[in-house]
Structures are given as C-alpha cells and as structure tokens.
Amino acid sequence: MWDKPAVLNRVSDLLMLAALCGVLYGLAAWAMRLPVFSITAVRIATPLVHVTPEQVQAIVQREIRGTLFTLQPAGTRAAFEKLPWVRNADVRRQWPGTIEVRLHEHLPFARWGKTALVNVHGEVFVAAYDGELPVFNGPSGTAKEITIQYRHFRASLEPIGRHPGEVSMTPRRAWQLQLDDGMTLDLGRDNVEERLRRFVELYPRTIARMTRPVDRVDLRYANGFAARVPGLPPVTDAKAKRGV
Image (cartoon, rainbow, N blue to C red):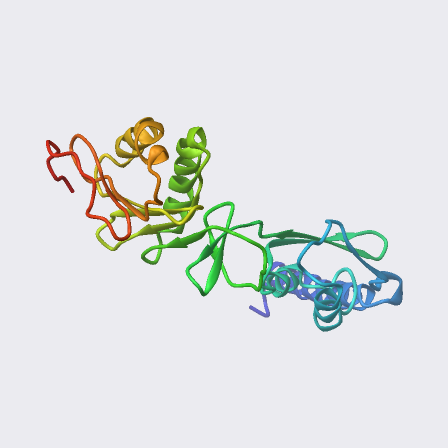
C-alpha cells in the first residue's frame, strides 16, 4: 500500500475528514451547552382542572434541565403522563429558551367499581374524585363497551325521566341497570335494546301507575316483564315465556 500514492491520498483524505467531523461534533456539543441556549421558562399551554401547580413544579424541577438542545422531550412527556389525571402530554421547544407543555387531562365519565374511574373515551384510570358519577361494573377490558352502551341506555330512558346510576356486565355478558330511583332492571344477554325499548313503552301504563315502589324488573321475557314489589308476590305476564 505504501507504494500506491493514490491509496495513501484517499486514506489521508478520509482521516482528515474524520478528524474534521470529530472537531465539528465537539464544537456542536460545546455550543449546545452554552448559556445562550439555556431553558429560561416553562409554559403550561392548557388550562388545568385536576393537575395541581405543585405536581407540575415537581416535574419541572426534576425533569427539565440543561438547554433546549439537551432536553429529552420524550422523557419529560413520560414523566407528566405518570400524573394520575394526565391522559397525554406534549412537550415542545420554543426559541429562544421556552419549553411549552400541553397537558390533556382525563374527563371523568363514570366510576369503575370502587377502585378507579372511566374517562369519556372509555379508558380506565386511577385518580381521586369526589364528584357524583354513574358506576360501571364489568370484566377487565370492557370499560369502553360499557361506556358506549351506557350512552344508549341513558338516551333510551329519557322519555320516562329516568337514567342509569349503575351499569353492570357479568362475565357471561348479561346486562343489569340500577336506575336513579333505585329500581334494578335485568336485561340479560340478548335483544337488550329491544327489551329496554319495550320497558320504556309500557312503563307509563304499568310501573308508573303502581302505588308501591318497584325494586326490581326482570325484562328477560319474550312478551313482557316481571316486576317485584317488596312484600308482594311478583307481577308477571302469564303468557310470557322466559328468555335469556
């Protein structure tokens, strides 16, 4: 190789290029740490309802360090998303020295049993909340389906002035509603919408006229339903055939 000038020249050029790249990299790394690029402000660009200023300040002090160039937005975003009420976060650099943070909070829609909450997207999250919410019960992974079904139940019951306070799905996918007046509706697994529609249609001529409160209505019949009044035998349609 030593007797091949062309090869030696090519190697020399490559070595010089590598050295130049190393110098440029070092200069760039040094420049990115200059005070002129320091982070001087953190701006929360979204209104906060549940996330507290103290929580934000703790993450800012722990995660936001260095300069605009050395900040790791992904790590900062992940830190904010660990807060109980944060559904997702967006962290952006803004010249000359500002970090803009957008926090999108969960909007509580229901309670998930006694342990968690459900947001408007049907996602389960854990946070403290003392407001009044309907209660959802069901197998793991069914919160979104129950959220969708709850909206249908609520709209279906509006004509009789009732709304579901608790919605439950059993492991066998049978539905049960507890209304705001304490009455429980057993809807079963099949033809749920049709059974509820029939109940709403017959409610003014049946349940609404009863002089004693009904605590449970079984809608799992082909042509009617059974109502239970505490202290009295059930009122049933004698021609009805029990379904599922």
